[in-house]
Image 1: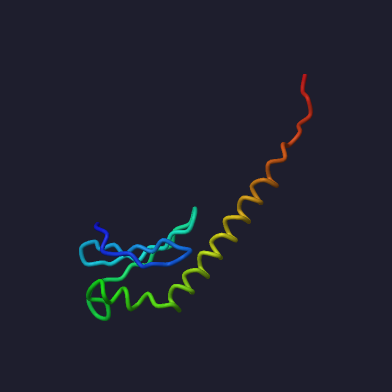
Image 2: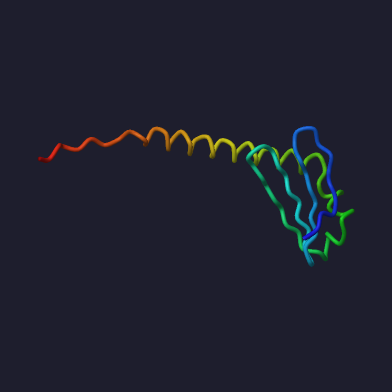
Length: 93
């Protein structure tokens, strides 16, 4: 896999990877990553097609998905913390 390019964004790191006959568009923000894979051929034939595909609407939709990931992550951690109450057992002598 090689890095084929970057897309500039103020709040995200957006990287384009190329692997054999696939392109991977990866979004990173803090602890979260979101990746989209596209097969070469058809509408996506080269890196320039990925740049055109990743327009403002696509990036905003990806940000929405990352916000949903953050909510799921936060809820899971809160659920874990609330389940940490230790069960008390009768003392058996």
